[in-house]
Structure formats: structure tokens, C-alpha cells
Length: 360
Image (cartoon, rainbow, N blue to C red; front, side, top):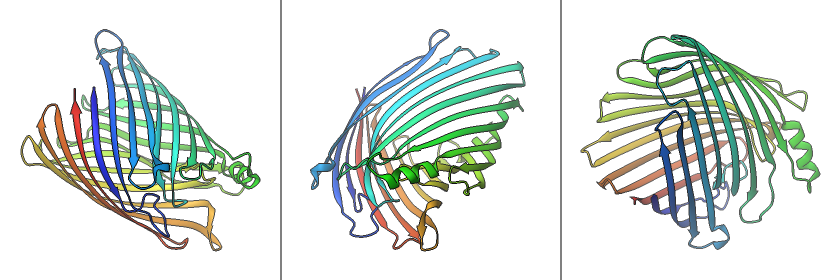
């Protein structure tokens, strides 16, 4: 069992463009985990509850359930067929910069996959997933739209070496936004922004060089929405790399994520985010990190004057971690983020968190 205790200061709890509200939030997150990798079946599961209390506005207090369950079969190294299954449920409360208010969301997802090796160095695979998100505005309790997504992906992989695998993928997704039945405008906009998208990408996973590890994926998507006019082509990527500048001491992490995403506020956006994180270990007990991110969000249904809304998001962060023992870790985290938009004023947000991780 593990438990995280945290004290957070947030200067803008809703990422509001006007009249930001600051808060102090106390939280405790106990979690039970179970892992088994003996025999042919590997099991990984966890159950947690995040309890948060706001210093001023008690309407925002929450008790968020977090559940995850995963299976892998067979649990052996050399086999032609591998299958996996996972499911998760999470409740979250986060600021929504699109509407400038804090929202509560419940997300349920199921994912399954099969990989088959025709030959020791190449094979095919297929993944399928389904997810559902339900959201509401925290203070008012007003329901936002539900978002359902169905995904099917097929790929061909080639084992370039013992440490590196190459992959060619095709993905099809159906995106359904279900509007609020009490709001005719919400129903209309949700129907317009629902639709389908397809993507083709190439990638590599494993040790790209002796000091560079992770995964790279680049490709393009084509999106078709039900409004009949929003056909879009764009760039898609899911890239996560770690560069060991000094092995086990200094690591530079790079993440690039780009995709088209349906939202519970009846828009289908195109998001691109680049994240850099620099981590350095001074001793086996003390480490620190600095990070920076830059993102662009293109809206489809939300207008700024006569043109679609466009946001530019920036953030800078730092972290310090001290390992007292295998049972106790203390962290100090800080972040400054800001937003520029062609839709009115942007926003600024500062957060500072002190936390303790306990293992029991």
C-alpha cells in the first residue's frame, strides 16, 4: 500500500481569463497495488481514492476513485503470440482552459491487443479500445457533453535488432460527442463536431542509440466531421524519448504529442504539445528537475471574431525530490503557465506543491 499526502497552492484554479480565484488544496491519496508475474499470466492492478479539501470554496471538495487492471499473456520472452487487456476508471477535477472553469470528469476505458510473430524478426498486431468521458462544471453542476471514442489500429512491426523495433501503423477512430439533452444548441453543436478520423504513421521503439531510448512515432491524420465542411489533414505524433547525458545521473526527456481530439465543450480541436524535462541526481537520495512546454491548440467550432479560436500554451516548472528511505520520499514542485489566445485575454497560473509519498 502507498499513500501520497500533498499541500497545493493554485493561483488560478479554473484557468480563468478574467477574475482568477486562488486556493489552497489539501489532498490524501491512499492506493492499494497488486502485481503478479509468476506463470503464464501477468496481472497488474491498483485501487486508490484521492480525497481533496479546498480551504475557501468547499463546494469543490472531492473524493475521486482511481482503478486500473491489466493482464498480459503469455508471460514468457520467446513466443509467437502475445495478448494484453486493460481497463481503467478514474475521477478527476481539473481546470478547463477552454471555458475557464474547473470541471469534474469520470473516464472509463477498455483496451485490448494481440501481437503475432510470423518470423523472429517481423509480425503483425492489432489494438482496439473504447472510452467514455462524462463531465460537469464543478461549481454549478451543469452537465457538459459526453465523449465516446472507439479505436481500431493495425500495424506491421520489424525487429531491426535485439534492442530496436520498427513499426508501420494504420488507425481508425469514431468520435461521438453526446450533447446535453436540456440544451438544443449543445445537441446541435455536439452532432456537428462528432465524426471519424484516420491516420497512418511510422515509428521506432527501444534503444535508438546507446544513450537514447524510448519511442518515436510520426504520421498524418485525416478528419471528417458531421458538419460536412470540416475535412482536415494534420500531423500526428506520440513520441517519448530519454537521452542519458550522463547515465544514471543526468537525463533529458523529450515528449511530442499531436492529434485531433473531441472535447466535452462541443468542439473538435487539433492539439500539438512539446515537452522538455531535464533531471539531475546529485546523490542516490537527492534529485532535481526543470521542465518547459509549448503547445498550440486549433479550434474548429469556437470562433474568435470571424475566425476559429487559436491558443498558444506555455509552461515552466521545477522539482526537487529527496528519498529519506525506501518508505518515505518528499517532493517540492512548482509550475508557471500562461496562455495567449486570439479569443479575448489569455490567462496565467502558478502552482506550488509539497508532497510526501509513503510506502506501507
